[in-house]
Image (tube, rainbow, N blue to C red; front, side):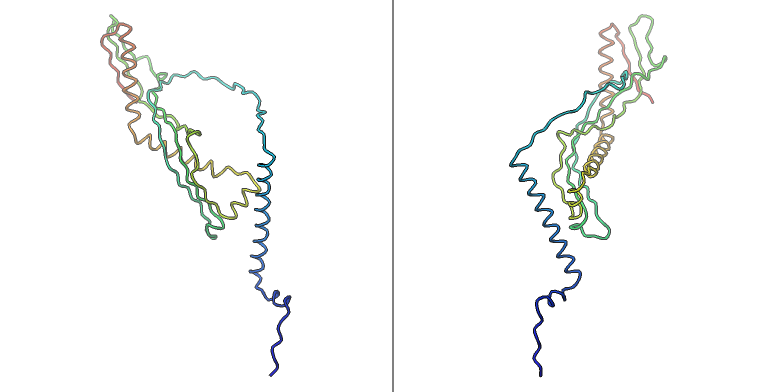
Length: 222
């Protein structure tokens, strides 16, 4: 029986499956890319960096007369957990998950500019006044960027590579919009508008009594 001849090293390498070779090549490319990124960061730390603000002056585009009485404001905080998955790839390859703390404010106001001729009635002696105001409404949520921040971010390999070659703030904008939406929903579920109407009534009653009115009545309609 003829003994089996050992294959040379190049022949054994050639018998490696194609997908294994492709994975090996991808691993080497990624190692080179991330090594280069780390080197760039180390060079930045070594030589330092400077920040220059070369922004132009702010230009006034328009002016609006305000007739709203900001009667109440609510401060809210929400934890946003936003996850985006790929249908065909595992999360380690493609997918993002962001944990974001959103802090914001919602104002409740009464629009005094919508008062009509019959909404304010005063008696002849100017001792009694009746006011009919529109119901309080909620302003759009305002996100406080100083108190809002990302707690954790998980990104797949392809998403990390995309961040290297592009500056895409889409995920950050998505979590901010989602935080503002949840804050707005919380404000609608609260009693903020009712508090705004009570504060408006107290403000107008005190103002009219200081002007000599003894009987002041404030009602709210649509």
